Amino acid sequence: MCDLFALSAKKDFSAPKSLPIFAAKAKKNMDGWGIGYFKKDHALVEKSANRVFVSGYVHDSFRKLARVIKSRIIICHVRFRTSGPIDDCHSHPFVLSFGGHDWIFAHNGKAPAIESYKSNNTTLEEAVSDSARTFEYLRDHLLRHYRNVTQLPTLFQALCQSTERMVEEYPGEYNYLLSNGRTLFVFTNHRQFMFLKGSEKLEGALLLTTLARGLSNEKWIRIARATNRKGTLLAVSGTDIILKQSL
Image (cartoon, rainbow, N blue to C red; front, side, top):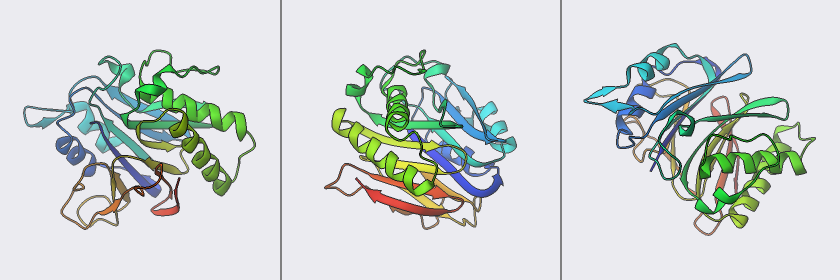
């Protein structure tokens, strides 16, 4: 199963410690990697179909990016293929522009039902996967039903409703990270996230990962979905989880 990482901070941050540790701990995922970040509100993504960890070493380009990227929000994905071929365009994160923002999206899980979804808007046409269709579905539903969403609480509720409807229409296992460069949205309906704020060993931002034991021997906190619900959505701003709702 793919693994996810995110960093959220109040100002531009790098992740030269936590990103390589994440790559090494997620080394069982052998089918590509990607790092997404924002520069002056523009989404930038660097990704590769190569293994992130080979012969005891983190991929050279990955290590360099971990040192030089500076962004309030950083999203990373290490891939284990469940759908689509192994190539650069199927590595996450993905980027779409809508609602006046660039958005970065990364997903892990297994939701084959949503692969049949057809969007009437701009598509991630080269990516044939449940993850790409999930991103397009959420974008389309937000644009169709919530075009005038500008305030965070309203946007959060719109994303809650969009995600809940997606899970009803296309049942499956979904974990995703989604950001417009200002807020990080985190959803899980099948696998926990672990988070840590103010690490003394890693970066002092808020760190999130799907790795079960976190990235250090500090006190990582588990974010698990309510077992009798469709999932849990969170909104992260700076170093704080400011909104949380079980669907």
